[in-house]
Structures are given as structure tokens and as C-alpha cells.
Length: 377
Image (cartoon, rainbow, N blue to C red; front, side, top):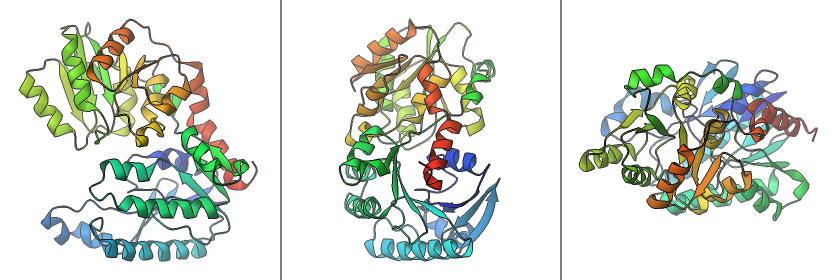
């Protein structure tokens, strides 16, 4: 089977599509699209990288063929440029479908639904809610919503990342064509992980109990709330490890320096292959997200990764996380006091992998996705 998957962002950004496409590529021919919009400084627009972005390009990522979408960037501030880029995107997708005899397309809001033998809508997040809450151009949310509604009307099947989004989709179309397939985790990588190297490398003492937040540090991450909660614990035996990069990292470092907070370790971005070792270095995993319509409908992959590592987890009381009902997850309100109390409670729990994690193994989920793509479900 020839599959074309249209991810919602640049292929080099860690995302849901990576795990599914790599698993599917073991049995099928997989093509994906790629685009970049991170040109912000004036010098970027005179770089080779920018010129490459203007033209079609193709490369291999293992068994996956990646097709670079030509576009002009940045376009987020201009509806006219967005429409121009959308036409370029749609034209390339139509050409790929014909040239590579694509059997099924998995689409997202970045490209309107194409004419394809079979079309699947991967509803991977409440994207309109994100742009309304955090985007600098909230009007873009209306464009996203229009395209997603088009997919909901035209796609043969809808794959929703959360039960919250699946419920919403079933209210708008035949419920039998809506499937809930959450984000997943490669469990074997976490079973073989070793956190000792990480602790030695960072200088975390063997007797220190380590609380960890592993995430992209975006606007909704709740990183400052976590720092405030950690400052309330006032225990020299505790360390806080923040793994990841994003717009909140710089201000978080400044907050730590300003308040003289000790035993806080920022790693910045780490290689994907090393994430299990960082998880293994922890005693408690934390997901301090803001409570918003966007996060309520999300399927936080870090919950599954923390759980695959056997960690007690403290999470903001989000609707989708509550429905998972993992026994290792402690739900708290989105304020520092409640978060600190939850961390104290988690520190008294032993490590244990919850049995539910088997349902979130990426290979199991990929097989379910494959059945939808082939029409055998």
C-alpha cells in the first residue's frame, strides 16, 4: 500500500506522525510532506536554507520518502501569503498522489482535503483552540476550523487522538467512521533505559530524589508554575530536572536566577534517542500544563512515556488525562500549591508500570491505524 501522510509541521519536529509513519513503513511504502516556517531574522531570508525552502526537494529518512513543500515564509501574518502557500501545497499533494500512485492520504489542517482514492483525517489536536488561546493571529483559528470541517465532511474515516475529539467528531458524522487512536510510546526503549549516566553527567547526587518535566516548553507548558511549586518544597534532597526547549525556557532560567532557586537543572533539547535515559533518571514525572480547551482535548505523549518508565506522575486535571484513569497519575489543579502537594504525594509512591500502558504501545496502535488505512476495520 502506498501511503501519503501530511504532518502538521516540519518533519524535523518531534510529533505524532513520526512514530506511526516509521511503524507503517515496515510494511508499506510511506511518503510524507515537509515544510518549514521558522524564518524570523532578516539574515534568514538571504540564506541557502531559505532558497531551498522555495523549491521542491526530496530526501529519504530511513524507509520514508520526504517531500519538501515549496512555500514563501513567514506567511502567518498575511492571509494572502497563506492562501498562496496553500495552493502550492495542494498542487504538490495532487502531483504526489498521481506520480506515486498513492492509495490513501492521511491529512491534517495544513492542506485542504485532496482528491485521493481514500482519505483519512488525522485529528491530532484541537488546533483551532490552540490558536485562539496562544496564537498571535487568532483569526487563523477560523481558517483551521474551516479546513478541519471540510475533512470531517469528506474523509472516509476520522482518527481522533483523544476521546474528547472523537466524541466531537461523532456528533458531526457517522459514529462508525470515527476511531480513537491516541498517541503512543515505544515501550521497549523505556524498559532498557538507564538513568545513571544522565545523573552523573548533570551532577545530580545519587541520594537526591529527582522530579522531572520532559516536554516542549511552549506557552501552555506551565513551566513557571512548576518552578513555583518546587520552590515551596524547600528540601535539599530534591532536584528538579527540566528537559526540553521552547519559548518558555529563557524566562524560566531567569526566574530561577532571580529567586535563587537551587538544584534546578535545565538540559535544553536532547536527542530523541536519549529521552528514555532521562526518564529513567527520575523519581517523579510532572505534566503541569495550563487547563485550557486545547490541553483538555490533548493526548499528552509524556504521560505515556513517564508511565512506560514506571514513574509516578503528577498532572494537571485535564479531561483526557482523567479519562485515561492511570493508577500512577495524581491529578492536581493548575496552581502551584496543588502541584506541590501532588509532588509530595508522588514522592512516597514506588515505581511501577501501569498495566494500561500496553494499550498505548506504538506497534499495537500502528496495527490499528493500518486496519483503518486498508479499510479492514
